[in-house]
Image (spheres, rainbow, N blue to C red):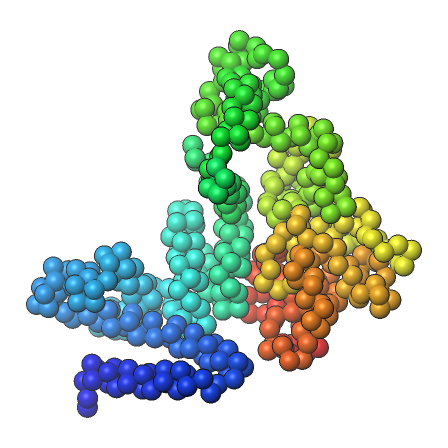
Amino acid sequence: MQSLSVRIKAMAADFDALRDELAAGNASPRELIAAAEDWEVLQRRHATFSHELLTILERDADAADLGGSSLKDLLVHRLRISSTEAGRRITDAQQLGPRRALTGQPLPPLLANTAAAQAEGRISDEHIQIIYKTLNKKLPPWIDGTTRDQAEHTLAAVACTLDPEQLQAAADRLILLLDPDGPEPADGQARKRHLTLGRQDADGMSRLTGLLDPQCRATLEPLLAKLAAPGMCNPDDDTPTVDGEPDPDAARRDLRTPGQRRHDALTAVGRALLVSGELGQHHGLPVSVIASTTVQDLQRGAGVAVTGGGSLLPMADLIRMASHAYHYLAVFDEHTRLPLYLGRTRRIASAAQRIVLHAMDRGCTRPGCTVPGYWCQVDHLNPWADGGATDITDLGLACGPDNRMKEKGWTTRRVDGRVHWIPPEHLDTGQSRTNRYHHPQEYLAEPGADDDDGEKPGAA
């Protein structure tokens, strides 16, 4: 039998021939995209060969005999890769590669479900890194082994049908379900200017990063000097001081760090601006916080509401915010929806309908789109020009670019509360019809179920 090295070199020769055939330019665009899908699956499956190779190498070989001080050092020098990459590959092999007991009996990989999904070519390295991070860094340390294994099984199952962004949303929601209270909050010119509001973590916190230009800094400095002073805008006070000077006693008992005071000052500034009513309208509604929740959660004072920006707002924070200013709040029974009907009496959706759509859809309904509700338009699922009615059951949220997709032959309809996007026949590859990114809890409800509420891929 030929050696492994010789056989791998033979495979490389076949690959070179394949590249020559591709370079000839005889393949149609449809053949090319199909080849890209098959190539992606093949690359994912090839990673499992690396896991097995490294697992056996670590078990049977002495790195010193092969010219390295350790397996990691050996890989760095023989494969000419970085120490970081070598460490990552070894970790992958330890987590996803085969194992043996001390008696020599074969054992499944530590992350057996993830390893199986990778072996079938159904998940990428991006999916795997999200699963690692969720299990090893975000999962609370008190979670028992059985629950941890179930979490890995769930994440591996849903990863097979989701892209990495969707998987991240599902993973964050899984952490919230396993640890509802979350961990204790941690004590965190021109072309270059930017401000980025990062993804909301499982504990509800979001990272804000950016570079301020001189004008923005000069604007913020007096605001912070006033509102971030000791004793000002302190949420721990029964009546926080937001005007005038703080009471000396309030300043003395203010134990917040400077960073925490600046954070609370920013909240106060935003709240005052929303209350002022001077921001006009956005997509048909006065600029304000839009949140949706259930009667049951409000009565319990527990759970979370979902804002029009797609963020999760703990019920205690929602109730506290409601005491300061008027916000749009859509409240539903836990298992029902209240439709609002306008028929064809008007073409433009009413403010009430827009609020309900924020609660029902939460963001763009086209599968794979992550744009939250604040940045979406109201779309007639059955076009107005074709006789569509302005009923809540015939409306949905869609971002501008996706809304224009309907000019290319896409059609939409609402089935069991979810908007289905049906492609024209020449674009139908059996892709998902619905978008669950804005409802990540549904990824976890039925990991193996079809995500189109029973409608089979390819069905019109």
